[in-house]
Image (cartoon, rainbow, N blue to C red; front, side, top):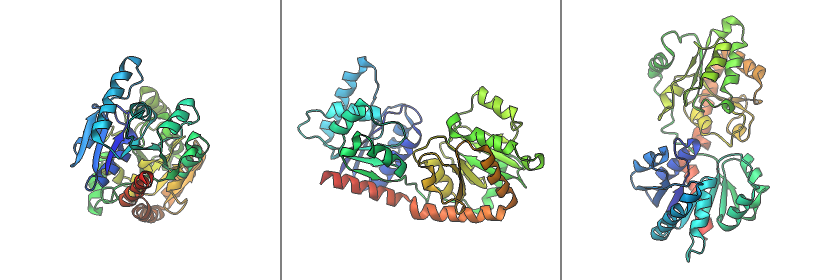
Length: 369
């Protein structure tokens, strides 16, 4: 099968990039995979490094002066590639694919994955659903419910949750953990509870709420907690809030990491406390590494975790609820370790890449039939 993946993000791209890269790696051995994305993007750089995958520079801008040229370039790629399936991953590239495939004598089947919880009831969505969507993929049941109340309901919708490489995201050897903790938290980490996230430093990721939850602990307990937040360096306004809470020496910012495994594995538990979230690769990677995950009840996040078994679910923005879970972790370190074992079992059973790729391939084959 010839498959073209499109994605408009020009820089990091977050979960969209991880999603496409995981599919490309899983399918490249048996199918012809092309990825069309901006040349400056993380996706382009990663796709070029995968054996058997063709990376094509492609822009999906909204500037009127560039539209005709970009659409013509994409149309040429589609005509010359002879693709069976085009898999779109965002509104901007989906729109360009719609225009580029109009009146083609042989239009590839078009699959669209909705990765976020943004509204899908606009005129643009109506047009894309009608003219350039043969099958939709929702990354969670929460997202599927949004799509079922949108123009996309006129075509099949399948829920396929993110898959991760559970061999790659696996607990490191236990003897390496002390060294990792020295690297990321410094030599005084012993006797402390270490929590980490690779969800980023945006306000709506909820990490500042967890900083406030730690600050609300009694002084002796507050001193026993360290946090790690990977992603773009926080703004001065965010750092000012951390200082205001008296936590500036207890939060580590390692920056945007190409490989988050070492930083997360150094922790005892992970967290994703977003205000809105479709599903979350970050949560699944945390659990793959054998860490229980503290998550908010936003969007599809609760679909990752069994509360009290392999993690905890708290209401979004509920600082007292977060403080209570921290209290539990401090008082019951053995339970945190046991929940980490359960989290790894959940990841291997439900989050594995083979299951994810096979379900996506089933959608392609169904759409072609």
